[in-house]
Image (cartoon, rainbow, N blue to C red; front, side, top):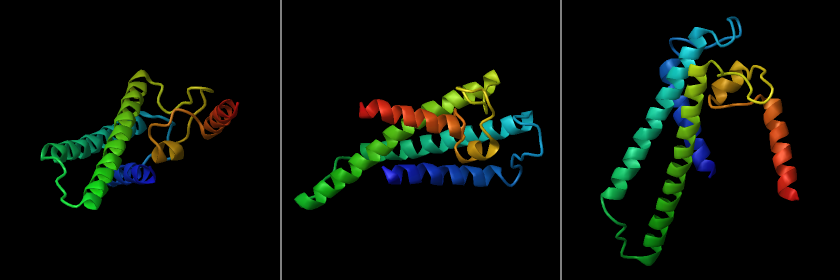
Length: 152
């Protein structure tokens, strides 16, 4: 699971490398200005495109044929690798839904603001996690409540 998070972070870094030479949002400008919203829209669209590209490659590999390892240990290892790959793609499918939701929030004028408190989420947090829907404080409170309800 840690490799899936690493893969998401790596893909996001690659997308940012394409966008950042032109513009990086800063605190010196109005929060969620048209320029910032366009930046995040392009970032989210490129991120989604990179996820779809990786998914297509996985699908193509699956269609190329079944695992045909003669040795049982090799076959088990290959099946484990495929299982991890499929879990990663499922996680990315869920991430794609979050990206779509973030794009809808941009269109609705709600992007960049906490869904709980209505406060600005902050540029640094959005640059690190463009699909964030809560401020750090609201997210921490949410996770504490979740942990308490899980412990009951």
